[in-house]
Image (cartoon, rainbow, N blue to C red; front, side, top):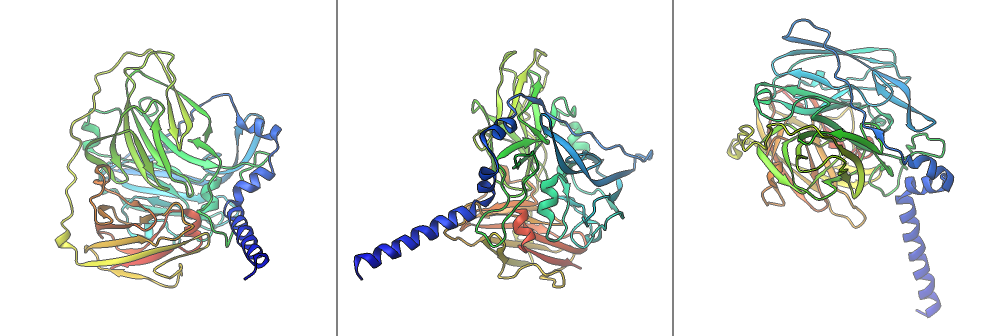
Length: 481
C-alpha cells in the first residue's frame, strides 16, 4: 500500500470519528449554533433568584384515614430568565408540581386530569401499588380525560416522586416540566429528632438540567439514530430555579434530593468539601447515617442528606455543587443553633435472605441513542417478557454490556417493588446502598445483583431510567400473578 493510499484511509477515519463526535453531541452543537454572545449574556442570569419551594398539595378529605388529591397536567409559561417567558408543562402550575404528602396506612385517591393536547400518564415512582394503579404506559390518560388512582399506603416513610410514563414521549413531557415529589410519613419519621419543618429546615431539591435557545425556549431535540446518552442540558436548575439562592439557619439542615434529569448523572458536594450525612435512599431511611464528601445519583434516584451549617458565620455563602458547577448558593442567617444532632441510629433495615430467592433472572442492557435493548429485545406493549409469582422472592442480575463509545451506563428501575442491592461485580455495595432502592445505576461493563419480593399483582415495567433510552424501547414488562 503506497503512502497516498495510507493517507487517504487515515483521512477517512479521522473525518468519520469527527462526524461521530459531532452527532453524539448534537444538542450541544445546536445550542452553540443558535446562541450568540449577546444571547449567552442574557441567559446567564447573573442575579440570584430565591429558590422556589413547591407547595404541599391540599388533602381534600376530612377523614384522617383517607387522602384525596387533584392533579392537572397542563401547559404553562415560566420566567426562567428575566424578561423571557418560556412555554412549559406542569402539574397544577407552570413547571413541576406540588408535593403530595401522605401517611402510612392511609387510603389515597388521586384524580389526574389531562389538560394537555396529547396523551399522558402519571406514574408513582417508588410507590408499591398494584399494576392497575401504577401509572405506567397501560394507564394512559387521553386529552381532556381524568384518571382515578386508588391505593393504600403500606410502605415506610420515604421520598418518592411522580412523572409521566407515556410510550415514546416520556422524555419530552418530563423535560417540559411534568414531575413532582411524593412524601410518605410514618411513626418512625415522626419520632426521629431530625429536621422536619418543610421549607424551613427540611428542603426539597429537584435537580435537573435543561438547554434553551436564543428565545428562551426549552430545547428538546434528542437526535434519533445517534450515538449519545440521552438529552443532557447545559444549565443546571433546582426546583425550576436557575442560579438559586436560599437563606438557611446556622443549624442542621435536611435536603431531600431527586435527580430529576432525563439522562444525566449528578455528583453532589458542598463547595468547601465538608462532610455531610446521607440518611435515606430511594425507599426510605438507612439504618444509620453515612458520612460522605460527595454523592452520585443517576436519573430517578433520591437521597436525603443532613448538612451541619452551625460552624458557619452570618454572611458566609457556601454552595451546593453539582458536577463541579455551583447549583445552589446558601446564605447563612443569624438564627441560633437548635438541639439537633446527627443521629447515631435511624431504623431497622432487615436484609432479605438470599436463600429465600426462588428464581434468578438476567437482564443485559445494551446500546445508545435509539439503538438500545434489554436481552436483545426492544419494548413491545403486546409482549409480556417475564412472569413472576405473587409473593415470591427473586434475584435479578442486571448487566450493562461494555462498549467503546458508552460513557454513562444505565440507571435501572423496577416498578411495583423496593429492592436491596446484593453486589456490584460480586463486591459488596457501598454503605449508602444498603437500604431500600427502586432505581440503581449500572455502570459500563458492570453487573449489579438485586433482591426483592413481589407483593402486588398486575402488569409492571422494568427499564432504563435514561428517559430517551426508555422511549427508544429499553424497557420490558413483567406480570405478577
